[in-house]
Image 1 (cartoon, rainbow, N blue to C red):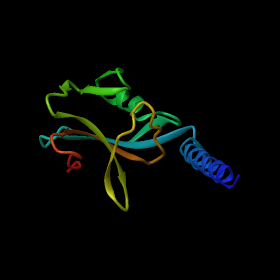
Image 2 (cartoon, helix red, strand yellow; image 1 turned 45 degrees about the horizontal axis):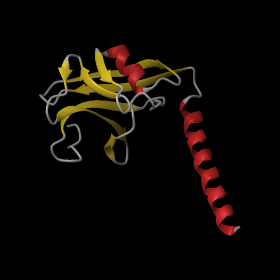
Image 3 (cartoon, rainbow, N blue to C red; image 1 turned 120 degrees about the vertical axis):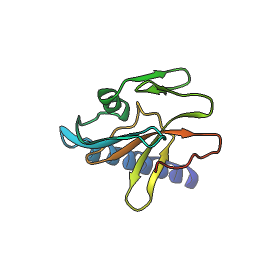
Length: 137
């Protein structure tokens, strides 16, 4: 019985935290986000204070700002941004900025990640021959 109560408490806590995070991100009807495209060749395009709808995913906002191609085999996977295609071990990764940490690589599908107000994210064309790839510079 004790194990069952512990498992139920942990599951309940997980769902409470997940719901609370989603609620905080979707409180406002219109949010503003910062999004960069780092081509790893010295070119970085920033779209600061981009207006988005509450509940928009990273992919939603990316597709408003850039030409995006992707595949859905085994989950959504971005294959090209602004005609820069994944090639060999180089491809598009996405990162979020955390004030206390810096750039954090996300391994979560971009079509499932809901952006929050004033959040900063970056699509980075990274060399994945060593894992994890180096963060955007």
